[in-house]
Amino acid sequence: MSDEELTALMQAINNRYGLDFTNYERTSLKRGIIRLMLKHNMESIIELWSVVLKDNEFFLNAIDDLLVNLTELFRNPDVWIKLRDIVIPEIENKSLKIWHAGCSTGEEVYTMNIVLETLGLLNRSKLMATDLSTKALNSAKKGDYSLITLKQYLVPFLKFFPNRDMEDYFDFHDKHATIKSKYKTNVTFKKHNLVMDQMEEKFDIIFCRNVMIYFDDALKQRVLDLLHGCLKDEGYLVIGYYDIMPDYGKTKFGIYDVKTRIYKKLPAGTKQ
Image (cartoon, rainbow, N blue to C red; front, side, top):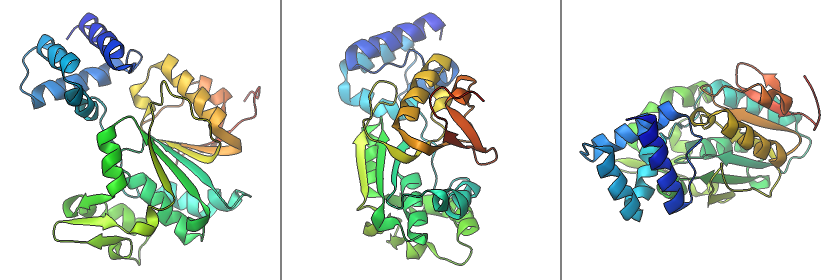
């Protein structure tokens, strides 16, 4: 696939659906398009082009192939331990507002609520969970995961909770388990395009983990401006282990903890 073919396809998608992928990291996009073509036994970019532009439902489902969802229950447990033991206790306001930008299928959201419960803050906090994918959001709202998937999450779960069982947090069935309803009640799920849509609310903590790996520098700058504007003074930004904070971002966010990729909002005009 040539760069010209990729650019033309992204421009056509933008014109047809109003979704701008033109500044996404090109290598990642190409891998996503190849995954999509292989999945549907397509032999040429022209064949994909035709289906994408004619079939709205096909394209909405295709978003999940273009952008791989990277999320797990208690993914990188050191992050959650740091949040539980140090970060959240430092926040003076104990009625927290938290935004999970790019929440995917919801595991990170429910992890956060489990952490909040350990601190007695579950019923005093509100979570906003957003994603570009309608399919991922619908899955997140259900909070239903296969037993095979949950088994993969057992190691990080036990690192955080060495003396607890998953049955304390999930209702188990024959082949799947559903997060208990009390971990859903304070969550608002919303479709949101991090690149194009605004967010008017202010948050104490924003998670944007393994999302910026898809963006070029110009797009990262735009998103970091949005996240900075949506954080309360001295609020916290948590990025993914695969994300790289660009130099521009270091004018907006100071390093709070290098290991866990937690940053703290800098006042406007601050230089490090």
